[in-house]
Image (cartoon, rainbow, N blue to C red; front, side, top):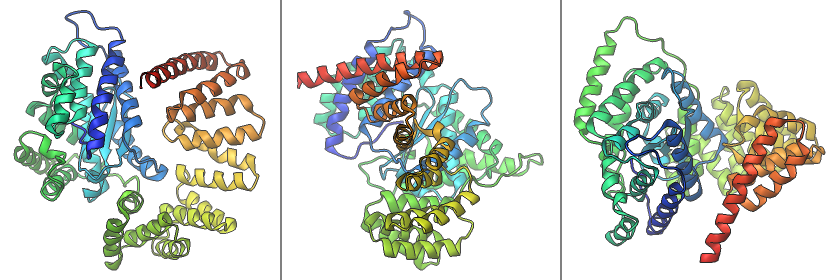
Amino acid sequence: MKLFLKSAAKRKWSAAVAMAFLVACMDGANPPEGLCLSLSEEKDLGKKMLEMVKERMSLVEDVEILTYVQSIGKRVAQNVGTTPYHYQFFIINEPVPNAFAIPGGYIFIYRGLMELMGSEGELAGILCHELAHIQARHIHRRMEEGRLLNIASIAGALAGILIGMNAKSADMSNALSIGSMAGAAAMQLKYSRENEEEADQLGFRYLLSAGYPSGDMLRGMERLNQGRFVSNSRLPSYLSTHPALSERISYLAAMVDKEAKNTQRPPRKASVGDFSMMKAALVADYTEPQIASERLQASADAGETSGIYGLGRLYLRRGNLEEAVRLLQRAARMEPTSSLALSTLGAAYHKQGKYREARSALESALALNPSSAGVHLRLAAIFQEQGQNEAALEHLKEIEELGPTFPEIDYQLGLVLGRMNSLGPAHFHLGRFYESRSDWKNALFHYSKAKPLLMESMEKQHELERLIKDMEKKRNEAQWKQMRK
């Protein structure tokens, strides 16, 4: 599926990025003639593409919103059976109703698509469909069918997809000058009708196994079908890029009817979070403020807690702390079991400098959801500011494994460990933070400092040797590119 870029500026860097990506991939070893892309090569290609997307596209980085989507994805992925992939899920901060998967197990969903969904199950249905494309190795199969048998040709084809077919003609001409494979081969990689049907069937099975209602995938598709008629016509929607839309909705309806007669259907499971509150948080934090205000006010006027919560979060975004606290207090009273409402209220108190009230709200939120990464991170920040480094570290350790996904965790760990004179781990986490920001120079500095301080672990030594070598290469490439400008 294509990534749809909103502006001329983004189209300009698309061609440049595609060329850089093509060159980078050509540095790798090509498979022997006549052989398909191996699984390890597919994963390597996916990592390169992930790095490109992270560097060049705006991603939603709010810990609570993203961990919610990741929790849904993880729940679904646990039901696919044996898989060679470690699935990861990301949200692109664009109002486009779209989603896509890239080789290696990476799934991206656009903010605009999430805002169209009406329930957690509908969102899960979209993730199931994208996950099924990867699990069935559809891109790999399209590569084989198109006789794209080396990394360079695959890179060119995927670059063509990345550029997008909605670029202006002049931009497209520039993009196609990368090589003929960037256009023609990109079309070879488009999912076929058979691919889409298989992804729907597999995804439907995953959705049921994960405990979601059978009709959720169908309802999600129907919402997207309606949404494409009201979205910006320059930005093709998720379903308008797929073949046989009406046919797909029709056979999904038949699958739902058949499942309704199944007397041994998988048991339903509770949702992993409060979808309406999460969607309100997404609108409040990332939609254009005036549009967000109108939408959330309409919801609040209808008496919906999510609308009141969203308005409170929007005031927090705008810096109106007094009004934010008032609305968030109201939302927390209306929905006393909402960890999210209490967590955001704690954040508002923190910004007011009311540490006691902030800690009380956050500790109440943690009692409702002990695994909430956002609450742990906020409590750690408060304890750090109060000089209670041991308490801050305790909370950061609870979410340390999320550091590669949420760089702020690594940054805070680096600061706290440094203050506690645990310099080896401090430099390691700061290195990882700067690596996530593509700051190769500072990442190399901290990794190099960490290596002689972590001699007791051979595993960590090997990891740091690899990281230092990688950072040196990327720093040198960045310097070379800068010299050529």
